[in-house]
Length: 292
Image 1 (spheres, helix red, strand yellow):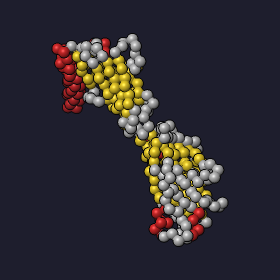
Image 2 (tube, one colour; image 1 turned 120 degrees about the vertical axis):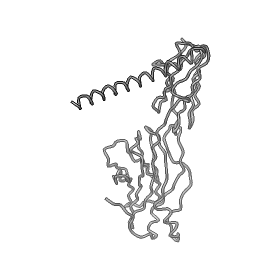
Image 3 (cartoon, one colour; image 1 turned 45 degrees about the vertical axis):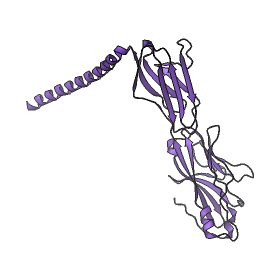
């Protein structure tokens, strides 16, 4: 199915006006448009260039994976026979016509209040496959005018500064910093785990503090004072909107730190050597039976 704009660009197109609103993020984490700036509408005496600018206009919004996206389309002076539809461009699926939706996906809904000029397509629990362009199509007596919304889905990422392991001296302080980025909405929480035990509020161990600074690039700092041998192990940063990130911490006496590193490297080399030996023996056996 192919959709195209038909009809002339005469005075009758004064029935449809689109406004493009700048993008902000609400306190609830939903992506909305807000503001009062408007594109010029169709009216008697307007130039062709003005009409073309208003029709086929494009706006961009960003929504966080799992959040709610609001795609706005403001239409002024819609006639009784006029109809507003939302179409997903990647498969030309007609998602809605008026306030009625035509999809089995219950995440989609059209929001339109009585007397309002806003025909909003709401998409709950957005997924990566929702990424793409959506067309708000207004049918008039003389043809069709469109407004396009490009929806970008972003996936927050978490990582702990440093390499995959961290070495500290016995009795010193363990400092770890976890970064959560690509997140329009800050995470509701950041929990730290030592092995499988959450330590944000660990009163038994004592000497542990967690400081989190939410924002577009959230930072969470873990501080463990007076490190002991028992503090060695895997440390994990787990935010509410990302996959967890981990790092391995080794606590040892100053003179034993290099020994711990050497033991780890020796173990890795031994594993590689063993695998190579097995492959060599397997190859020799295959050659032996192949020559028989």
